[in-house]
Figure 1 (cartoon, rainbow, N blue to C red):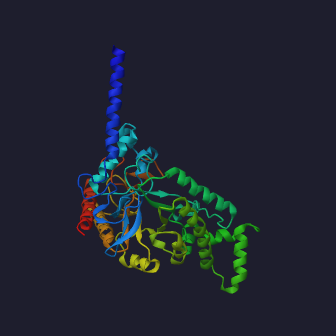
Figure 2 (cartoon, helix red, strand yellow):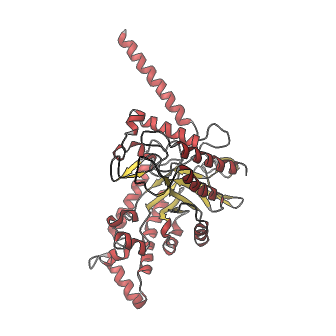
Figure 3 (cartoon, rainbow, N blue to C red):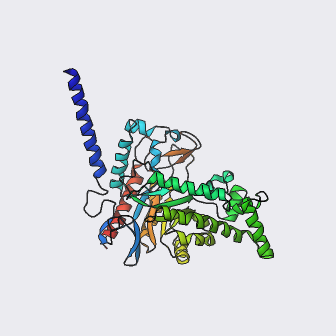
Length: 414
C-alpha cells in the first residue's frame, strides 16, 4: 500500500509540474494587458500576418512586424545565457537561486521581461528560453575577427576554398542549432569585426590586409593581393583592398544565409559604433536587411545615426549597448561607467527616446546578470540588471522599467 501511495504521489507531482510548465509556456508576453500579441507586437498597428518576422512601415516609421502581423519595437536584453555560467561569478545563480533548474530560471526571465517591458532576448540565450520570447540567432562565419580580441584576433584567408567550406559549415550548423522557430526575429553574423584599419592596427598590431599580404606564396589570398597590385599599380592602397576582402566575405555568406533562412531577416555583422567603415558596410547592403550597431557613447549620437541611415538607407538596430554605474563592491567595471544608477538611466533614456526616429527599430541592453571577465568573482565586472545571486539592482531596474513602458505606451497610442 505504501508503495502504491508513493507511486501515486509521484504521478500527481509530475502532473502538477507538467501543468505548471505548460501553462507558463503558453503564457504570452505582456499578458496582463490585451494590447499586445503573443510576441509583444502592438495590436493597434496591424499589417499582414506572414508567420515570421519581417520589416514594414507605419506612417513613415520602420517597424519589425510579428508573425501575427503586428508592429514590434525590439526592446531587448542580451546574454541571458549567463544564468548558467557559474565559472564567471562568485555565486552559482542556477544552483543558489533555482536549485539547478533551467525551467525555474526561464520562468524568472519571462516574469522579469513581462514586468520590465523587455520583449527580446536578442542574442546569447539558452535553447530552452527562446521558445517563449523573440530572439536573434547568431553565427560567426568569419571566425575570431572581433576587435575586442586584441592581439588574439585571427584573420582568415577569405579567398580560399578552405575558408568558404568552413564558413558554410558554420552557417549550416546555425541552421541545425536554431531550426524553425517563429520567435526568431533575425540572424546576426560576426561580433564587432575588425574592419577599421587604423583602429585595428593600434589594438591588434596588424590588419586584415596585413594578414593577407603575409600569406605564403601560392595561397589564394596572396595571389589575389598580387593581382590587385598589378592591376592598380601606384594607385593601390590598403583601404581599397580591404573593401575587396569585405566583398569576398559578404558575397559568400550572404546568399548562403538567405538560402538557409529565406523567410528570416538578416541583421548582418554587429558593427562597432566607434568605427563604422562605410565603404565596407556598403558591400554588405545587398545581403542584409538591417544595419546593426554597438555604440560605445554614453548618450545616443543623433548626427552619427542619421548620417548612417542617410548613407545606407536601411533601418538601424542598436544590437548591444550598456552604461554601467559604480558600486562599492567592484573597482573595475566594463563599459562606460558613471557615478550612479540615476545617471546611467539617463543614458538609456536618450537611446530609448531615439526609438521614435523613423529609421530605428530597436535597442538591446547588454547583460542580464552580473558576470566577470578574466577572474571568477573578481577581475572586471560585466554589470547586469541583476546580481549574480539573482537580486535586482532595484533603482536601475525601476528606471528602465518606466522607460520601456513609456515607449510601448507611446506606440500603443499611435
